[in-house]
Length: 285
View 1 (cartoon, rainbow, N blue to C red):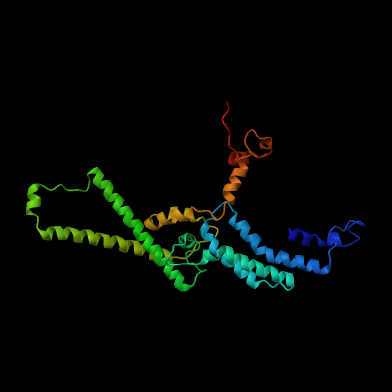
View 2 (cartoon, one colour; view 1 turned 180 degrees about the vertical axis):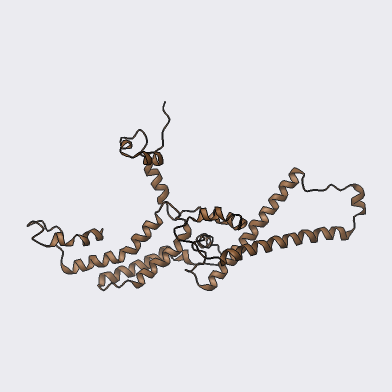
């Protein structure tokens, strides 16, 4: 709001431009200075709001980076008036109270926002965290990936057992002649196979975090769809957390646009492409 006011200042303050008696916002000089500072202080919040309210690629994984960026912008802003400095103090306090826990990692309690950021190829370097916390997050992702792989292996084994595949029936003679070493050997083979699977998952996690981040404009879900073959276990984890939206704005926007149907008076004002994208055609009776 302050932006247009400040930009249109000359139209309102000069008598040769504005008719006599029409100085609606003939503010004092210090008030104009305050508006200029307010515009400067609110600019980062406007950018964050537009980004988080977007319809594409805006998942909860972007919140930590946005919060850190807002905090940095407040610290770096050079507001000189007492009101401007008071605004900065209030803004910083509000960010800490509302969003401070988002950028905090605890080994005792999983933070889905931090995990989403780690599994987002745009933010996988976790630059908003301290180096020691980055290592802890990577370790947590590795543990979750191993659990995911084991769960998949056990589920596959259950399916095979139910279908009767992958199982060799033993006769009574086989059971009679089986030695303890035979049973021990089977257990060792199973343990060795499980260790190999764990090592494969660990290598997958290490490779993922070593790679460079992608552009902030890229779609993380599309990236995972294209790289699912390289990171089969991590892709399952990523899709489970990256589906969380950063805000409720996209869903609210959908409900708002649903008001415009093929029977709405406003429908005819929309172009054909918009009609196709935003209109739900209700069945006729």
